Length: 116
Length: 114
Image 1 (cartoon, rainbow over the protein chains, first blue to last red):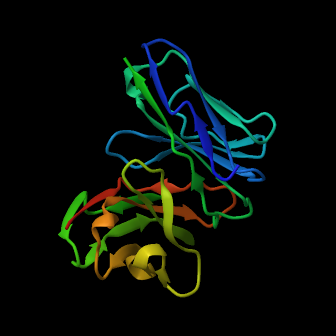
Image 2 (cartoon, rainbow over the protein chains, first blue to last red):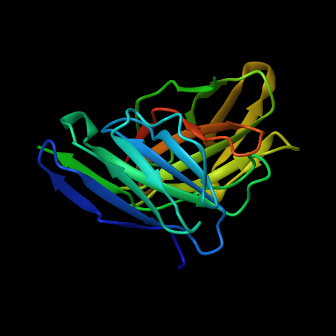
């Protein structure tokens, strides 16, 4: 597609529910990133994929957070047993390159999660 | 670990005023520097970037930024703002290494009155 597509755009979950957020990166983009953006804050790094390999998951806040990209394209971020502090916008970004950090990330519109 | 500091949380300007948003980072090695903008209701978009070469970089919509290595700074400037520049601005940095994550500042909200 022309851009990074995320779904759902809005998700309301009851505390304790599991949620799954989907990201469709730009076709051919090797790198995929997930970020969490709380209200009034900048995006915070969660995890990074190079093709299907999850090379960095140091930003995942707890073991309730899990991400996968099994075929190197679409990625899913799963949050188990959601808590109120998980309420945020979850951003997905992709980039064409892998060689260095000199890559431009293209962001999706985000999935806004509200946990009641 | 890298970090990014944006000094101004909220800036309010009148149209035609000049703009400078501060950004400082902490990292001892070679870095790549970015400014992203988020207009109301839209997603994050790249405004400009610095990888190497001329430390004064120009981006879209008349924005520019200057990388001053000795000050670990990458301030964003525009000589004359417009109402349509109302948005949130994020400075970001990553180390010039394979697969490194982009680290963002907390952002600066710019409000321009007409």
